[in-house]
Length: 265
Image 1 (cartoon, rainbow, N blue to C red):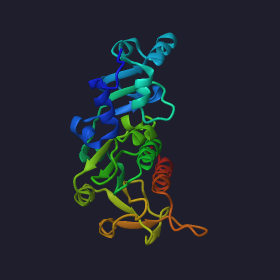
Image 2 (image 1 turned 90 degrees about the horizontal axis):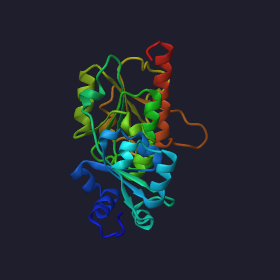
Image 3 (image 1 turned 30 degrees about the horizontal axis):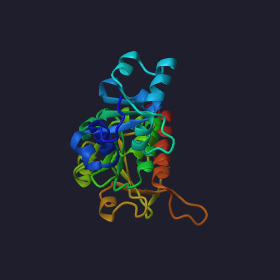
């Protein structure tokens, strides 16, 4: 049992939770909570830590597969609580090997549906977009290099497991990737306040990508200009725009609705 916060494994665990550079360096991140850990593919779990009390609960209630439980490291309750960013930690954290896809993997198939994100900064928004994307049948999520870390603990938690099932890639150049998608026959739509058409008018049943921009500033003008079409979500009342995750949800589900109507989903 680990009983000291000075233990090297605990230091490494805390570093993964708090330092994006450490996550990038090791290619690993931390999943917390029984639901998130249970959703994690076992082969991707590099290490598992259980608080002393939770380890006992796991064994009594058979909450984890025996093979996974046997590889767990038990940690004194107060030590694991001091590491966790949660206000009420459950007592289970897993170090998980990250896995990203290529743009080619995201766009494979006859009618891919891509969500491309530029400079999204809120971890909860990013996680919600992956979760919503899974529900809408998205083929993949492409993130600009200045978008918040996908493996931020808040993002991981917000995905509710979709992180493991939705293909995702980090773009070195969003402009180049937009051009590559267009060259592959994917029509790119920019969600833009100055859009020329309302969002529910275009046909999204073919290969489609939606561009969603930063929460406060939206898409950069030069990025929006690359799109085949700029679309807008009409607003009632005094609102100018919606939350980025809400806007992405509306667009993705409109595409899903059209595809269901055409029998493509």
